[in-house]
Image (cartoon, rainbow, N blue to C red; front, side, top):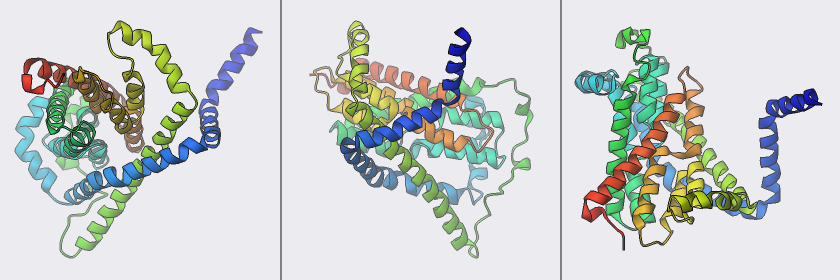
Length: 352
């Protein structure tokens, strides 16, 4: 009897993804009434928010990789990047673009650096831990102004997001610190096999290839946004989300956090935009709780972004572990810094 049960469990483990995907396909049919509006909303979110804010940065990144800009920036910033993050100066390109663009630009640059042998494996993994961030346009514009209706909240979230990002980078400077590949020689071994130095004669070809590569990445992101919008809709329509809320309510009551936040947090752990939108519309007097939870979700990024990054890193030999650890730490630190800022500076306190 025991062996039969053991065999049954092993069989389920072996076919777990098949069962999950089958359940997802069946749910799409069963809850099609609520799924269709959710999918349309996801497509609208992607077309109106993601594409305008990310696509130009993808193209700009691709174009800059076809110039000597990365090497020039590396020479200028090596004295800052090396002692601070234990990464050669070229990594500053990923750090800067990751800060000013948004998910998953930083991860894509780290993987491009690895594929082209610009940085060592360990350095690229350190880059993964802290360069993949929410962009200022999304934090200040979408979250601060559109969702919370206050640009100062957006500014606060941006400041604490950047501070947490830098802190994570400093902490992860010790990632695989004693690895032998620290003796790796960077630019001498660099192999720009996917890029050619841009000139007037090949400008059209380089621009076309940059746009094609960027379209491929932006379509991949769009697919994740739509799929996760559908998953969230299924969880709500099936009652699974409400059941999880009931299960977690005692824990939140013990922590003295309003149970209204549970649904938004769970949604945000899956997909940050929908989650933060839900958090922002919860009306309580202590709105600082909304802001602190939002800071955590912005730092963590959610499962949707994690899978986007995994789809990029899977083409390289980079481990996803530093990214997961880094984003969890980023979320916690961003929430902590936001709490401190609200407590110390009166003009960041929006409680009624």
